[in-house]
Amino acid sequence: MPGQISYSLARAGSARKTKDCVLEPLTEAEELERGVVDSNWCSKLFLALLWTVGVGLIVSLVSIIVYVEFFYKWRFPLRIDCNLDGKLDFNKCLSRGCKYVVTDEKLPICFFPPDHGYIKVGSEKPTSNGFTAMLYRDSKRTVIENEFDYVQLQVFYETRNRIRFQIVPANGTRYKVTVLPDYNVMDTQPSDPLYHVTCQDGKPFGIKVHRSGTGTVLFDSALPGMVLSDQFLQVSSRMATSNLFAFGRRSTKQNNLGWENWTLFSKAHKGNDINSPSVHPFYMIIENDGKAHGVLLLNSNAIDMSVQPEKVITFRAIGGVLDFYLLVGASPAEVLQQFMQLVGRPFMPPQWALGIQLMVSSEADIDAVEDMLDLLKRHEVLVDATQVANGQQMKQSTTNLASRLNARGIKLLRTTNAFVNVTEENKGLLIYRNNYGAINASITEDIAFIDFSNKKAVEYWIEKCKKLYDDIEYDGLVLNSNEPSYPPSLSWTSCSNNTWNNPPYSPGGDVELFHRSVCGDSQESGGKHYDLHNIYGHMHATATWKAIQEIAPGKRPVIISRSTFVGSGKYAGHLHSSNGHCSGEALRASITSVIALSLVGIPYASFLSFSTLSQSEHQGTS
Image 1 (cartoon, rainbow, N blue to C red):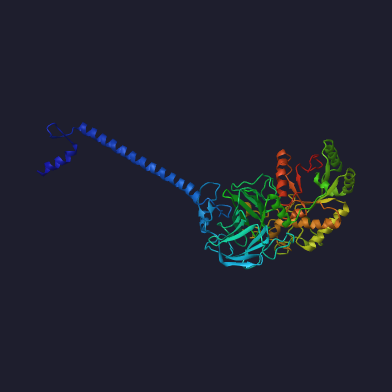
Image 2 (image 1 turned 180 degrees about the vertical axis):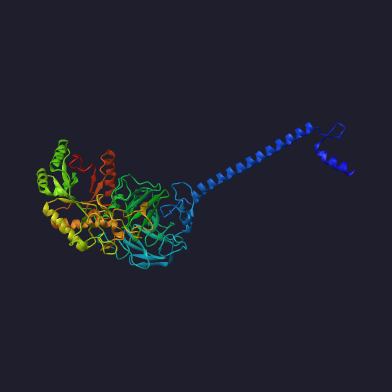
């Protein structure tokens, strides 16, 4: 009977056996209990499945984190930053052919792949005192506009302990710094050099300099990220140790390698180490055995120099050429001797210039100056000289002040600015805007900066110094506003929006690089201000040195400059301002700054430790 069979099968799952092995249907209570049991079993199964999925997701997440944090850090411990923009852009990073990995916030997220850079074309060509090599950009991706496809490496064995190498475009000319004094270079290779040079032919190309005898690697640019373009030059090098001493005028102690960056661009000091008026792209490394070597990048454009824990230093310049000097010495003292022999030995100031100097503002009353001198004398603080600012009130009584100071045996230094009032006489000697049609002057007053790259402007400046000396016989000059920077009291003419005033890469992230300064596209006799900005103060100091030598022949000139560059120590000391803050911390920081400046050939530094003396404030020394 089909109906009964169907019924029996349907009820088989809802039946139980009796003692006689007879299937009997379950009661409603038994069926209800069986349903509850099945329902609980399903819930447990669902929870177990959910727990398994959750654990799997957590394990996957942890695996990803471990993979990124450990594998990527292990595989890419060295990271040359590929982000050239103020804001990190994922798509732009990938379009440059760079890697994008978000890990530790200190590590570059966008960085160059290991094989990015240039390769050598053909073999090296020997010269009388070195060799040259042609390099080719081996990348289809563009990192920045106007990259050079072909560049030339030029190596010069200048002495047994100094080697020079440049990287320049194969075609065309570039601005090169010419501030170093003339020096003799060997016509042939030295017979017993303290260094040995090799080139890595692989990808990327690099130049390696080893110390003879020990084999210590002093310079190794076989690293990713070499970028060479019209307005952006980048190269990196390994350092022998982490014992780095660098850059001049630092208010901190020995530099650490924890992803630090220093911007070298002359600007009015803001109380920190960013954009200091002192620009010295030189560093010294003390090796593990106590020997030392130094590296100078002779470039006057704005520069970023950064270091990382892998003992790698990266140079970024926005123009010029990469012109390196490597000095090899048996000790740090020997390296510094070689450095000063290269850039010029510092001038020897007279004894009185080493003492305490009182800075006097142009609004100060002469009686107030004498009261301050008496107060300091009562506290056994002997003042050797005064720095007197130019001003109408001081000019009227300058002769009286000079006679009173002379009676006390105190020397007089006059403060002068690098800008002048525009007149028909000096119009052709000032810095012009890019179209040569207008002077780069302030909009509130006809004030502009002198073009010290112009020989006639130097003669004009010498005559101004002579006239100032005729008004009152001074013993030295303090050069101010030669970063160059317009005083805050003057309304500054903003710069045009072009590639010279707003370059593709902004060192230090400074989007207004030439704010309150001469615009980058301004024209000087020696070229664009874009290239000459960092050496403006140096040219100002050399012109003043010539002036004082003519004014007072036979006397030791005393010149103190706000802005200094490589080699400025031969002509001037450095005026270090602490922004008028009087504190023990500022005094302590000045010691480090003075020592750092002495490492770059400027042992004479005037540290402004207190506020200036004005008519309303009778306190302050320098």
